[in-house]
Image 1 (tube, rainbow, N blue to C red):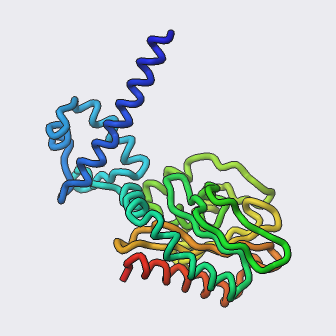
Image 2: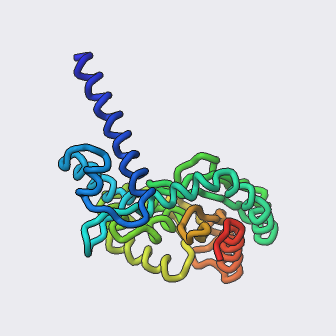
Length: 259
């Protein structure tokens, strides 16, 4: 039994390493590569390469061009690379803008970085209300019931969005939208308008308004949001609130190099 567990563990580790090698190889290529190119470059069987390629395509780390069936780096890898490239820079350039946003509107301000399964809180500034409302740093915000997570899902590739919507979602409140068709309508609206809101979705009485932050390659890397009670941040936000959050997101994006 111990030998079997060890073998399974080693196989899992080897598979993970091989997946990283695949991503690394394609990231170094100037043009999409065929299955034959990849198997020759990595000296591995076609069946093994195909299995890992399909898994990486399904999760967005690689993309298969429908016209040629060739493979290239995917949006998830680009986003992850951008996040690693910026690292502390994201928080550093965002904090002054977050403070200005908090001071102008009074709401708690949250900065979240993009990860494959949602947005992770990396910084926050508490609002001016006597009732403190906030989200702990390190919290993973899901893709379907938070304003920040909905940004990541709305701007994901069609393949990744379809994959996410095919997964059953757990209702966190009586008002949480979990039905795929209805959620897809919300995501389409978010993509068109450039901002997201999630009243009573993750917690009754709580609302958030978020906008996307992009890097120099125009890839989504993070979001900035205001968070408050539904009384102070209503289901239909005020134009002043929407404009301020979008302006803050655009300011951070410019500091990250977007033009």
